Amino acid sequence: MSDIIKLTAAEIAAKIASGELTAVEVTEAHLARIEAVDEKVHAFLHVDREGALAQARAVDEKRERGEKLGPLAGVPLALKDIFTTEGVPTTVGSKILEGWIPPYDATVTKRLKAADVVILGKTNMDEFAMGSSTENSAYGPTGNPWDLTKIPGGSGGGSSAALAAFQAPLAIGTDTGGSIRQPAAVTGTVGVKPTYGGVSRYGMVAFSSSLDQGGPCARTVLDAALLHEVIAGHDPMDSTSIDAPVPAVVEAARNGSVSGMRVGVVKQFRGEGYQAGVIQRFDESVELLKELGAEVVELDCPSFDLALSAYYLIAPSECSSNLARFDGLRYGLRTGDDGTHSAEEVTSLTREAGFGPEVKRRIMLGTYALSSGYYDAYYGSAQKVRTLIKQEFERAFEQVDVIVSPTTPTTAFAIGERADDPMAMYLADLCTIPTNLAGNAAMSLPCGLAPEDNLPVGLQIIAPAMKDDRLYKVGAAVEAAFVEKWGHPLIEEAPSL
Image 1: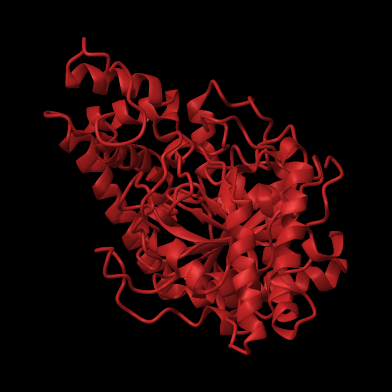
Image 2: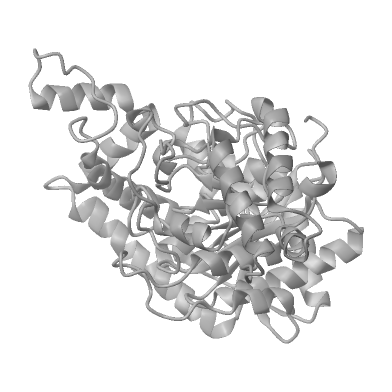
């Protein structure tokens, strides 16, 4: 089992295609790993053992018939519990959808199944993707496999923890303000936020519709690229889906290089609040990029300092609208329906019982920001800042090919450390939020361990919209240089497991 679970997704797919391994063997090895460690990690909310084995058997039968297999056929995957899965529970980490069984698959789910990827189950997350630590899950927090007393990031901490704990070689996350990249950074894995509209949002339970974006999570840049290619592409079911070819991400990952590229460093992405070890590893990464042939250009983007404030007006405003559908009348939890309460009272009681504190906080913030007399002062002003940020990115990308920064200001913090301080929690997304506001593509990949706590640090790479391939070209070059310099991948089985 230990040999199989340490393989990359690309290696697993090749061994299944050649007959060296069966998809059932691979799936059973990962299910056994989940059974062995998930009581400690709590990466999964639901493990679909029977469904996963059935998918694996279908892949083996396909190979036996001599049919051509896709590049990820038979590879196990952990799916964030925000994507609908026909016949399998989808809770979005909330009590308000506890036990809900969707009657349809999200587009991402459909594409995974069509590519013969084996879906192991649904991963834990901050309720409705609102959080940076997975502590806001109604079903309890997830632990970081590097240190189970630390957070695995959020909102997609379950997906990142599953990768770092070797419970799955691939995972899917969603990124509204950093919820793929921040978990990747603190768990030493790779996470990609594609260009907004590059991956369909159909069947992805909405938090903030103009910001939400699904994307691939993996332990290597190539694995992320292979998964990106499977889930991306135009979808007529999603009105925001981009009707254009998917950038050549796999080719870029196989031919990583930064020679002759211009790499931007934004001066706003450092300073007070940044951990010394994070800045140290980032500065080393910049030097490494120079060694690999890149030209480094310093950028000044003053509007980025306003991104956090703008985000926490725009995202709650959109969430207050999107979450209005959870009324206790159509699906999910229903409280107080005993014949003595009106429909309005049932809705109120259901929301009181079903939504957690952070979700309520954001609904109230958003409703206030959209209310009469405050709309222009708050939501309208935030959208103006968003435009400024987008324009600054456009000017920056006239000077550079990609931008790099730390992914997060600090390494993983302790579970409970920021639970009573929402502002401190929000600061975890300081470096990631500007990209969501602009709709650009971004990646986080490991760039070493912080010397003061021996926990992973993430390097963020940002590319212009629809230039996702640049992420993989730069990411693959950096990853290869790190492996050559230190002789081993950064992720190893955490001793706490």
